[in-house]
Image (cartoon, rainbow, N blue to C red; front, side, top):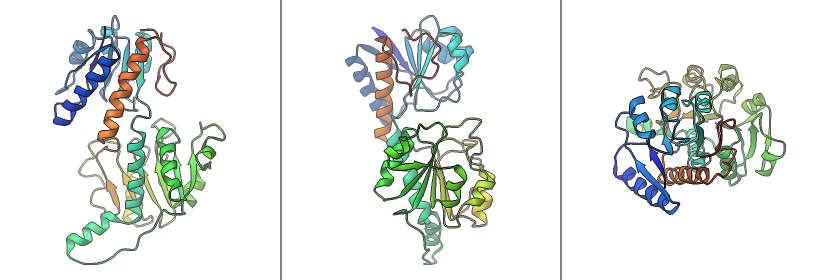
Length: 330
């Protein structure tokens, strides 16, 4: 029987329940599943856990040759819990003959809903309204709506597509920026591709759902923010450093745009001296877009399904498979 070890999360009532369910789900597929709660991750603890496993489910820590070279005799698959793989050195994994995968799409609904929630909250100025209530001064603000408006989506992967579906209920005119998107895909979701600058100059709300790459570093910069309408909002639920936080803070402080929402930051946790803290026209959340019970279980289930398919010699879905040059057999 193949053995899968999970190195994700620490003990809590919720994660105890999720891992019990995951173990049962894995057993149905003939897999022995073990959760090793991570009170403190180190290279040595990762090696000790994975060298006796056929596959591992990993989190955001840095994985490179220091780990791969010591586990490669048995462990042939690592599944990143979630969709990001920024800290996994894919070249080192490939050199060690270890396949790296991710649970693409498993949290798409959760993150798309958070993107929509942030856009709505920013348009209705909810952070400002709370401060008004707390001050004791009963002063209503005048916000904006999304219904029938132009909404831009930067990045049209699983999350962007889910968001476009949600926006269809608002009868929004959805603009998409994704340089790798084949022709016709956006249209099949009731959207259309547009140039980046046009999205910033015309849209009433913009949602950043792009992966972080050298090309998307500060994709939302001072110049593009300056193109935005004064009643427009921008939100980001993908990765930090896609938005230039200093430029955004400047625009918010000067009220050049209506508002913003950020769930991800260049440095996490967000430093308490960040220029974003204290502003009443920005929503800040601690990288929790995917933190719903539904999304968490979807990720566990997808990770186990990837392991099962890999052990069975099946081809992994292109969206899950990260280093295609490695030997794909278990």
